[in-house]
Amino acid sequence: MSFGLEHYLMVSMLLFSIGLVGVIVRRNLLVIYMCLELMLNAANLAFVSISRFTNSLDGQIMVFFIITVAAAEVAVGLALIVALFRRKQTANVQDLNSLKL
Amino acid sequence: MQDILFILFSVLTLVFAALIVANRNPVTSALFLVATIVSMSGLFVLLNAFFLAAVQILVYAGAVMVLFLFVIMLLDLGTEERKSIKAFSVGAGLISAGGVLGVFWSALQRSDMTAALGQPSVVGSTKDLGLLLFNKYVLPFEVLSVLLLVAMVGAILLSKKNLN
Image 1: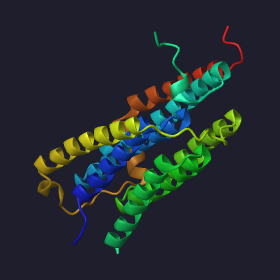
Image 2: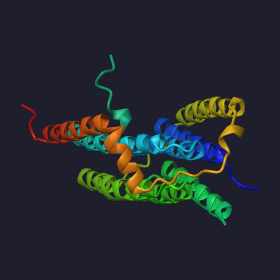
Image 3: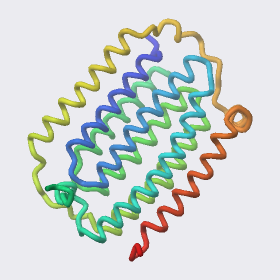
Image 4: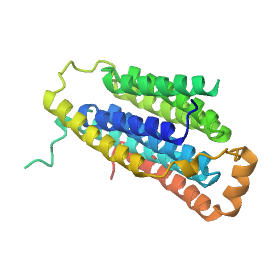
């Protein structure tokens, strides 16, 4: 048996679900951020597999753009986390409750 | 041969991804993220996306992970507290991920995959991607450079000691 598009899409959606579980379950800001990267990568895998099986390079260009935007997002997000840590001295999301009434 | 490699790389990707979530130490999680990215670029090679596989390793395993590890060590998060993760959040995470998985699964079952299973001829070489990038997608490419500049200025501004 040879593996086709649907198997790659299955791996992609399992990866997305693992990332989603991590975002909801974990309490550390940085680990949540890593799981967000995991979800972005699951989308990348789906784009590349669909790009191959439809014989079009447009999906791969889209992945190129996603990788660039993710890099920019990581730079800004980590700067935000550092600024937050300076002010609150914590990276645990349960301690960040200033907006709670 | 390709089938064996597909099974190998996809199992490795999923196992490493699960280990990111399961691990308590952020540094270990970051290193498992590197392993996930590398095995995923193996999947990219199987899909004939050679340039993207190289970019994936260079950008993620290189630049992004260095940034992550740098911030982890800057914040001194090596000793995470042994606070137990609540059963409520584990349940909520599993339920929501299961729901999303169910939506994806039913979408996959309903879609027409047989049309897409023809013999692939496209190869994501650097030359082809570059030609496409600088002809059809030249405007998004330029916008992206502005975005990177904005992100750089924002990161520098946010990491200043006093924001006044």
